Image (cartoon, rainbow, N blue to C red):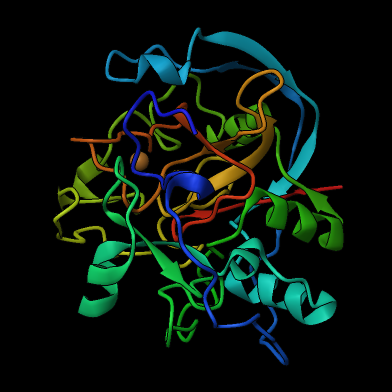
Length: 302
Ligand SMILES: [Cu+2]
């Protein structure tokens, strides 16, 4: 992956060399139904896409600000949850890419000492560890699970996994323009989905990093890792957690003829001092086979 600007998001799949883990594939039997699969119908329209923020990263090409027209869509009110993804796995026996490669990227401080010490790290983003057998159902690798997190966004899913889920669910990934149109919640050129202030009235509106990245997360917003998909108030369109919490895959390639895919929204690791990509116009990218503990997706019907 070409890295031109620092990002909190994980490096590409190729950045560390790790033998496949011995965890095997995950089998899912009965799971609680997901209550978070609602979509919101939005009329089509023209909006001002992008930003020319002075504190944006020039190589991210957020600008220029330009009018973009979007057709009517029905988009997920929430990111796809672990519970919904588990239904997909139980129904199809699909094996995710993290399981096939045998590892995925986990934020280092989530790991117990030995695993944290011994797992390989990408040189440019050393807060990530490539962890054997980490996958959607084992978010922190060996011995971890989803108890208490069924209503959190599924993570450790690649673009290819997200696309497979969509085919099963009769949905598709949003284009980047559709994502931004929906995430803006009807506000024109606001910095965040709820307005221009990060914490209006001192209240946190999204799940990002507080403290010093990457050593100390004070979790003032309530969460160190993922939050439930319905945490915090929604935006003006009724969508939750468009920014912060987890990066969301979009359908679009980063550039013409490139395999890398655009991700949007930033994650629980974003912090102003390093990666302010929780701004609604911010964007980043990763290869379609890459997986990490801070990347998920939301879907569009049809
Ligand atoms: Cu970030």
